[in-house]
Length: 153
Image 1: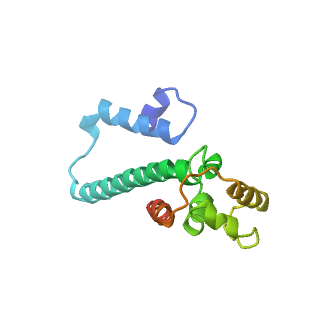
Image 2: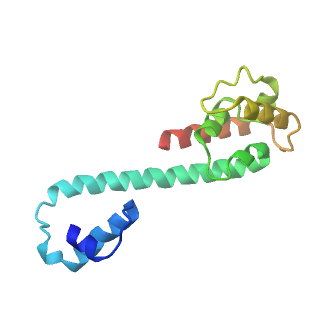
Image 3: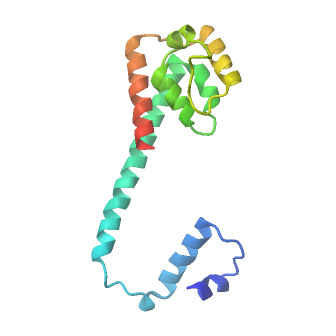
């Protein structure tokens, strides 16, 4: 198989290139591959299916959470341009609405990877938040969705 990879003239080795080379080898030389031991593959297929399901559910929960944040706490979305960092999710678990963030101080925000400057900015933004809904029901829903995304992570 390594000779097949070298023949493809790819000097770089990344996961994507390696996966392509393996698939290309299996397609080109299927007669050389032993497919007899399928029992062990069945368990791996089940695990793969489950992991795929978890990723799908995580994406759905994250999308729902993002759409809620547009209405409840849109200032938090400034920190989610390249996905939703874990510190944002943990912040939302403890302080789901601007109403709760207004009441806290930077000393009380003990969240890993949350810098003090950003914590101050978040609290300052919460005090002048343009979010429409500060209802506790929205807060509970945001907490639940943030916890769900963290669990699926």
